[in-house]
Image (cartoon, rainbow, N blue to C red; front, side, top):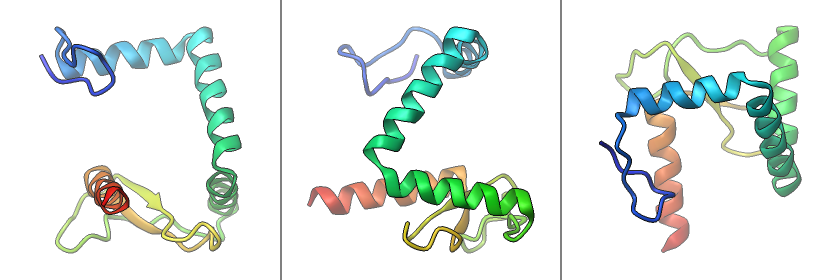
Length: 116
């Protein structure tokens, strides 16, 4: 059992790997793909700069003008599965490559700073 942040009772009675597998199966269905596209479209309307930066980066990656870094750029981290982080959306091709856990920690720190 693990805690779900968006539920009223904030707990689920299935394990996290099973819950992730369930979500992956749903996203593979036509209804799941449609729902994901709707959410992405709403996000692009709400955050147009972020959407434009992602689009520009994905285009540059596909052309080869920007290369994905081989590992996380956080000191002493050697994880090779990385995500792009835009420190400034007005510079869409200037990104820092972090692993999932360091990227999430970075955004958690930003949320704490913005709340205070």
